Amino acid sequence: MVALDVEAVSRMSPGRFFRDHTSAVNALDFHHTEDQMVTTGDDDAIHVYNTNTGAKTKTLYSKKYGCANVTFTHSAAAVVYSSRAKGSGGAAIDDHAVRYHSLHDNTYVRYFKGHSDAVTSIAMSATNDNFLTAGADLTVRLWDLRTPKCCAAIPQCPAIPYVAYDAQGEVFAVTEGDGAIKLYGTGSYSKGAFAQFDAFHDRNGQYLFNPDEPPPAVSCVKFSSDGKRMLVVSGNFITILDSFTGEHTMRIRVPGSGQQQHAVTPMEASFSPDGEFVVSGGADSRIHVWSSNTGFAVSQWRARHAGLPTCVKWAPNMMLVASGCTEGGTALWISDKQRA
Image 1: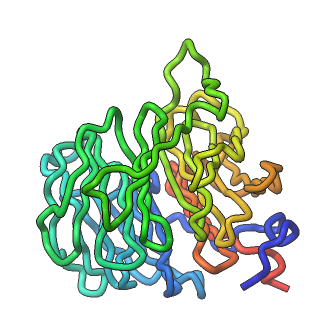
Image 2 (image 1 turned 45 degrees about the horizontal axis):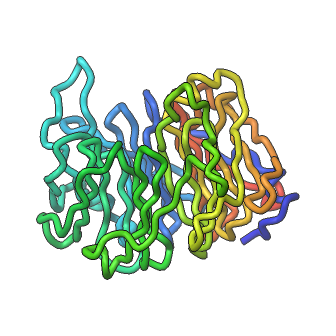
């Protein structure tokens, strides 16, 4: 692994650029131990890549149900993903099921039904077979891969929630549309949230958006790998919080042209493996990197993305970043220091 310093991060460029999706890339994920990445798109395709060789290894389809929010299970040969509402050219999805899909033999292992509207995010526990789903039906549900029955539900969120586990599997976060972030213990969630933070107000209670307009919807929540920080994406703002106190340590405005479009298009941001950097796509079709300690803009990476790079993830334990855009392109970024 290349040392994650400013020089290495500033010298990132696409080692591979794929045009396998014919429409927007809506999700991507890295396996935590194997050299594998998976992407899903609005074209109902699932592409699997070897991140060591930079080669596509498999293409599968979910044409009947669509696919989004793809997430690896603990096995590199299996993923879970949500159904996707079809447009005018396809049949509507009414069960909103999450599907457990074997990549090895292209079969569905299990269906998880319970949401009454589209699933908006999926988070897999790092320590067991549990995973979380959040939906536009304003509920969060807890599942176990081994059974189709929902294990627990958190109902009546005030707006569409998003979910994340910490890397230790001890805590999960649920965002709510009013800026609230609630933290639950994985072994004590039935007792309710043990902490609640606010992403829309600073420590002095000052509202951080235009009071005459509704705040942009939350589209992403993530923990740093050590669990000490969280990031929340709202429109073109990234707020970094202390995971223990809820204190805002940094607020970053993602630059670029077309800010209005950026504010309404759901965007993803990601911590580097050491938590020292934050990466996100911009409305200018570039990838932007900041120091999570100072908010200093470390670099802008120019790519061949023709659309908004809405999906951006840093690979675990590697100097490797993936980005997928609304025009179907997927880039694998490596540092020039790795090429030397």
